[in-house]
Amino acid sequence: MTLPSHEVADLGLSGAGVRRVAWAERSMPALRSVRERFAAERPLAGLRLAACLHVTAETANLLRVLRAGGAEVWLAASNPLSTQDDTAAALVAEYGVAVHAWAGMDTAAYDRNLVTVLESRPHLLLDDGCDLVNTAHSHRPDLLEGVLGGCEQTTTGVIRLRRMSAEGELRLPMVAVNDTRTKRMFDNRYGTGQSTVDGVLRATNTLLAGRTVVVAGYGYCGRGLAERFRGMGANVFVTEVDPVKALDAVMQGYTVTTMDVAAHLGDVFVTATGNRDVVRREHLESMRDGAILANSGHFDLEIDLNALDSLAVSVDRGVREQADEYVFADGRRILLLSEGRLVNLGAAEGHPAAVMDLSFAVQALTTEWLARTHTDLSPGVVEVPEEIDHEVARLELAALGVGIDTLTPEQESYLNSWRP
Image (spheres, one colour):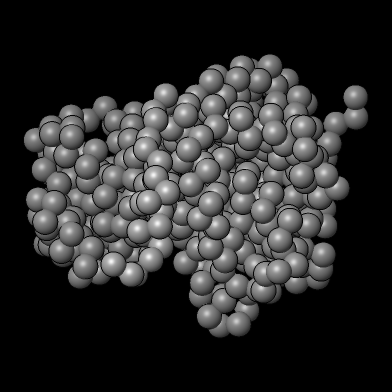
C-alpha cells in the first residue's frame, strides 16, 4: 500500500494509535452516526481538505468521517505539545491521512508544516487558531487560489478572523464553528473546565481544596474553569475586562478583582482570555512563593514568558513532567506548566471524547454544508446554520437516551403569529 505524504515521529506506533482512536470512538456516537451517512452518500467526493488541528484520537475520528465522505485530507498540528505520535502514525498508516506533525516540534518545523499542507492545493481549510488561514494570507497568498472556504474551531481563531474581515483582508468565507451554542456550551465550558483541572492536577498533584485559584477571563471557557475549580473546593477569584461578564461572575458568587490585586493572593493562576500579557512582569514580581501558572488560552502569549525568564536567576526545566520551576533572586519559586501553552493538552489529554463528539459532529456537518453552498457565500466570517446546531444536539440527546417534547400545531401557530 502506498502511504500518503507524511512526516511523523514513528510509523511503528500506528498499532497503539489505532487502539487509542478506537477507545475514543466508543464515546463518540454522534460522530459515528455522521460517518455512516457520509460513507453512503460521499458528500465530499473529489475535495481536498487541509487541516490545522490538535493531532489527537478525537481529531482522528473527525478525519475518518471526512475520509468516509470522500475527501482527501492533509493535516498539520495546531500545537507542538498536543500531538499524540501514535495517533499521527495511525492516521497515516491505517486511515489514509497525509500528516505532517510530531510532538515537540520547534517553531520552524511548525511553520513549515503549515505551508506543506497548504501546498496540497486544498479546496477547504479546517483551522484551529487561524494559523493556517493566517499563513496563507500573510506569507503564501498564491496558495489561496482554488480555496473555496473553511471552518474555524476555536475562540481565538474566530477573533483573529473577525479582525481580518473588518480590515478587508479575509479573502475566504470562514465558518465560525466555535460560535455555535452547542460548541460553546459543551466544548468551551464543560470540556475546557474539566480538562484544565485535569492538566493542573497531573502536572502538580496539588491539593485544590482551600487554595485560591485565579481565573483570568470569564467567557465560556472561564466559566467552566471557575465552576470546576470551585467544585474541587478552591476559593475562586475572577479577573475580567468586560463589565457584563464581570457582573455575571459576581452574581455567580465569585470574587471579582483586578490582576494587580489577585497577584498577591493567588496560589494557582489560569488564563483563558484569548489576549496577550494577561499575567505581566508586575504581577510576577508580587506572586507568592510556589505560585502555579497555567494557560488555557490558545496561544502561549497570555503569560509574559519573556518577563518570567528575565526575573529568574535559575530555571529547573522539568522539575515535574510538564512543569518548569523559575527561581527568583529573593528565593521565591514560580511553577510554569506546559511552557505556557495549552495546559489541558500539554499536561493532560484535552477534552474528553464525549465532548469532542459534539464539537466534531458540528465540524463535519458544517464542512458538508460549506462544500454544498460555498458559491452562495462571500468572504468574511459566516455563522453555522441553526439547523446544524439543532441536529447535533438531537444526535447527542439520542445517544444519551433522552427524549424531549415537540411543539403541537397549535403551539407552532401561536409562536409564528402576533395576532391574539
